[in-house]
Length: 435
Length: 147
Image (cartoon, rainbow over all chains, first blue to last red; front, top):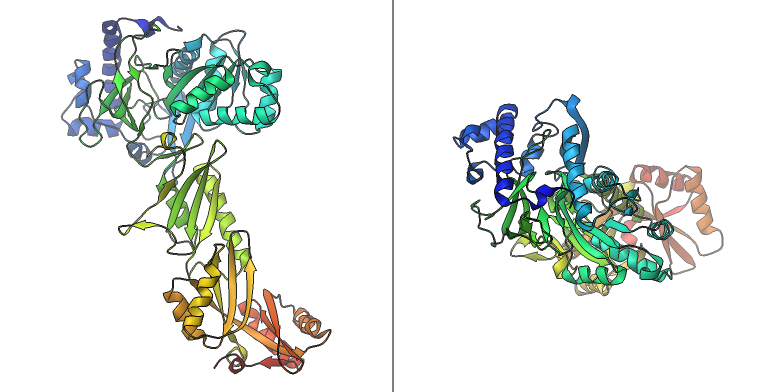
């Protein structure tokens, strides 16, 4: 265990949470006009927060609020204190931006160190990090955490499967960090290349996250690689990976001395008791640059507060069961149908009539967008139509950060139900989809 | 001159899907429309069927009503002797006038004649017709195709 707070008695933990929550409320109320207005509308002053019970009286924050204050409107520090900025793709062109002070980076590295310590990663371990490096928090989050615990990091990022396998074998990687589907893809390619997984590789544990994984997929990864499966849960709005981490007993522990979880009824906003399924909500209580009050993750889960066999007293969340909105996860990247629509509307000459088709190519997700060609868009030339396709694919890559295959189709071939267009066809494993 | 020699061609967008070509041709047959010339361009996923028919207006409304994506295009037709070098000669004239050919197709007519159909960029259509007439080529009037 990296930090003894993880196994502290609940009362002690809650005392720390309350003190930090009170500080955070003071901070956002006095430094962020958005929160002052929200608190005032509800008739709450930071001083009214006297117990953790008062958390439910505080206002929610949504992804839309982050977008409305693009880029730095919700930051509580001047930019000269910000040392890192990350962002995710936006739904209408504008991305969601998150910032970190030096202190926030320390918090992030701390929770990532705790994550890796679930299986005592440390000096002598080689962490093969195949999460994407860049604006996404996945790659760099694991990178800094691994350095903190004293392991050697191989910052391989995504893609180039065969080269990754070569490095994993030759560098003697002991820990694998990537999306579960990529871990399976690596296993399949390794077998094709003639490797014997358990003999040629030394992977003893894996940290898998950024997308949902079915129980079947988990078992397969454990079996094929012979590894301990640790789930990694996080979202950039809260900090990135490191919000919660799976212990070897398979329980996903929330690092709640930094991020206080609640589960609510998505419709009414009422807080639900432990054991009931609802939308996960987080309040950050140690962040400086971008503290967030009651952030609605749209992830659907259940919370439990019994101590775990691993010794941790931290709240356990079940693996995310689905989404309270229409967000899709494609190879670990979040995609909203509205983003696709935005690109189509932007590219001149396309009607917004489209269908998103999600399928598997091997174990990896494949996203196709079928776009109707109408009399207006239809240029009489193969070249012109191919150019339209290429342009749409390029714009999708620019805006959504993913490779989308565009297919031009005739009008009225797209399925419609009750006058409302059916926009999404998900042909992936029913357990692996988020809808 | 476009008015005199321009021929209405219909271009139809088709997904590469089994039976789709049959559906177009059936729709035309059921409306008693006669196809006078045709060409099919194809890519990996879709195709474009280009037709000159005896009644373009009727064909347009029939196909639109059946849900096809289509576009009307002005093309022109040149009648040449059915012998070596005829096609070359027409292309040479257009090339000499610095006119790009978007696409072309042809059919053999009666009496040792062949008819070549050309699509050029619309802003050069007038120039193309003029260049061919200046070189004493025989342009086919629409009435040859239409009823």
